[in-house]
Image (spheres, rainbow, N blue to C red):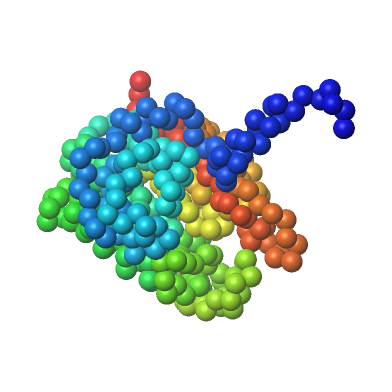
Length: 324
């Protein structure tokens, strides 16, 4: 190699990659720091069995067993590049941006599809309560019966109960988001260490990443059924492990008409591009994006199974934004 080659920039890029790890591709900007600081709290209650985040949300460490060393602690730092527990900055940005651009304090509605233990409906409920929203409407759908049972507990642990908050309405459904209401199959979940992966049309004994699983039947649920008569959704959070490739194209007219903002988890490079094409052509605006990372493993067959880090896209729907 020639000694005249200047590798300073290459070394700087390599250092950044080491420091940021899987978040090297972003999903956040320096502009987001001020937004996070605006909504941060400094006097949140701390409980021995929970970890409390910068917004004051308390998560029982049994729901995130890999983070038990944080029990009884308050993580005051903003979640950049992530929260050190379960989520990346782009997801927090989407929730806080939705509040920051809400047209009024009359009503806030968040729907979380592929909800796990309901972290985002809970975050929305805590923030909306603190901001004084008159009506708070939360919708969660989760395919795993084990994780579904934790959602109500998570809400209760954060005092999100209708008897304490009369304007609160929470709809928690057990099912798999799909294009119809057929019976699907989902890996049986017995521990919060593994909340399943993909629903499938038939019972399988190996999932898309090659793990041995036991499939159990689960009800398929369409977006019209899930959203019911909700006129507008302030933020729709979708994390359905590959099913977005089938669900989103079929539901784009409904999304155009009723969803103000959308945070979408993507689960393959193909889905990254497909979602870009669909929402761009439908006139949506992409505010933040983090592409999927994958390692090519031909033996796995499907692209979803090759994904080593899920992607994320945050879109806003200009049709439903308040007038400026």
